[in-house]
Length: 339
Ligand code: DAH
Image (cartoon, rainbow, N blue to C red; front, side, top):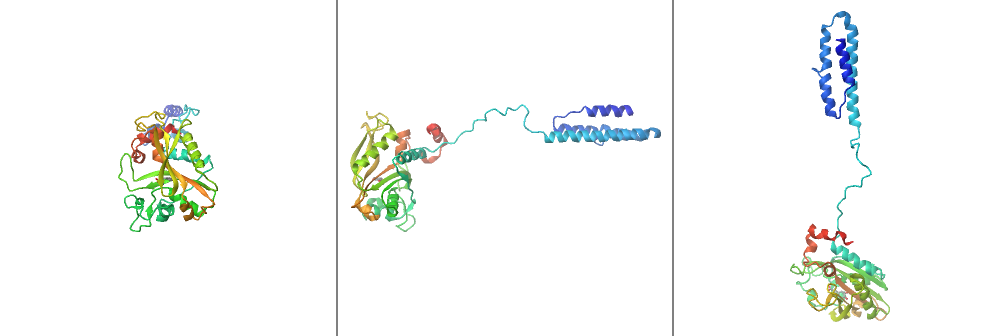
C-alpha cells in the first residue's frame, strides 16, 4: 500500500492540464468516489492494525495534496489571461469599414464653405412655415400660382400653416430681426407637391444666400456668383446671366455655367448648348426690404438660391433624383473617397 501511495503522489505531482475541463477530468480520476485516491481509502480498511497509524497519516496527506494541487491548477487556469500568449499586440487593427457622408451633405457643406470664405454665415429657419415668410413678405401677389394647393403642402385646413416651398423664407426671417449688414447662407429642406419621378421630388434641398448692405450692386452679385462657380466647378468655369423673373428680386436672373462635362463644347448633358442652368438670383426687391423693416432707400441687397440636388447632379452625374432618398448603400458607398 505504501508503494501505491507513493506512486500516486508522484503521479499527481506531475499532472498538467491545459484547461478547466481537463482539471475536472483529473479530479474525477483521482478524487471522486470511484477515483484512485478514494479507492485507496477504501482499501485502508483491510490494512493490519499496526500499520494503520502510519498509512492513515500518509493517505490523508495524499488526499490533501491531491485536492490542493487540483485546486491550484484550476485557479491558475481561471486567472490566466484569456489572451493567447503569442498574440502580436503591435499589429495594426483589422480595418474597420468607415461610413460615408451623403452626397447632398457633401455638396451642401462645400457650398457653405465657399460662401463662408466670403464672410457669409449660416442661418436656418423652420420647415413648417406661415404664409407671410414663404410668400407675402417676399412680394408674392395674392393670386400667385406658387401659393396654389398644387405646389404647396398645407398642414391641415389652416391656409397659414404650410411646408416651406423654398429657403427664401429664411431671408425674411433674418431681415425682420437683424440690422444690415446681413450676409447669410441658408441651407435647408423644402417641399413641393410634385409627382415623384427621376427629375422631380416632393422634397429637396436648397441653399439661399442673401447680402444686404449700403450700396450693394449687381456687380457685387455677379462677382460673388463667378467666385462661387469657379470654386465649385473649377477655375475654367464661365458663367452667364439670363434675365428672369422672381417676385422677390428686381432685376432677376438665372445663372448658367459652362457645361462642366464637355467644357462648353456641347454634349447630351447640356443639350448641346454648352451651358447648364444652376441657380436663380437678383437684387432684393425694395418691397421685400420694406416688408421686413429695412429702409430700402438706405440699403440694397442681392439674393440667390440654388438646388443642392441640381449642383450634386452636375458634380457627380446622378441621373435619378430618387437615389438621394432611397438609402441604397450601393449608391451611398460610392462617395467614400469624396472627402
Ligand atoms: N426661391 C427660388 C426658388 O425656389 C430660388 C431663388 C431665386 C432664390 C432667386 C433667390 C433668388 O434668392 O434671388 O425657385
